[in-house]
Image 1 (cartoon, one colour):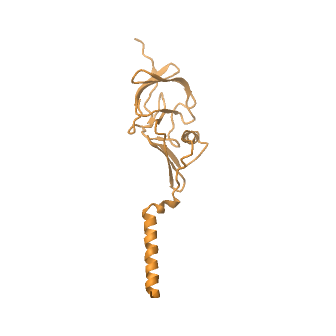
Image 2 (cartoon, rainbow, N blue to C red; image 1 turned 90 degrees about the vertical axis):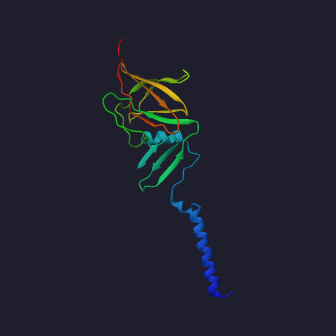
Image 3 (cartoon, helix red, strand yellow; image 1 turned 180 degrees about the vertical axis):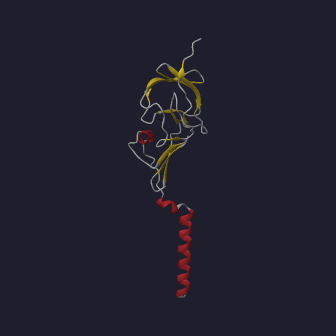
Length: 185
């Protein structure tokens, strides 16, 4: 085989291998990959409490998406049987939100105690606890997926009630629970 043909053939093989590598996803080598052994609940708590920092960290119904200062994203799958939802009860101020930002959303009632009751559609009490909102004013909950719940939040003689669902299309940020005085009948 003549030397020019051999060099050209070798070059074509190399180009083909590089193209196949890039087509198969090798171009993502510099993108961070999620570690499947990480405890996702602990990681969410670290971003919420700001003990772990990122440019942004948001949580959808299926994924935790963390973006660093170089605009590279690391995506973690959430548990298949649990749904994350964060609730910010308020009296005066709220913000519109659907996808909770662990690094950006700020609720009005920081580090306050709330009586939280959650009942499913069959009438089963899923939770009846006193919970403290975090430094971001939110109460983070992990609930069973694919259900609808009625949530009652009480604080200082005021109550808020709402129905929420934990299906794939549902919001992870609930900022619409305004605490109001209980009405006498």
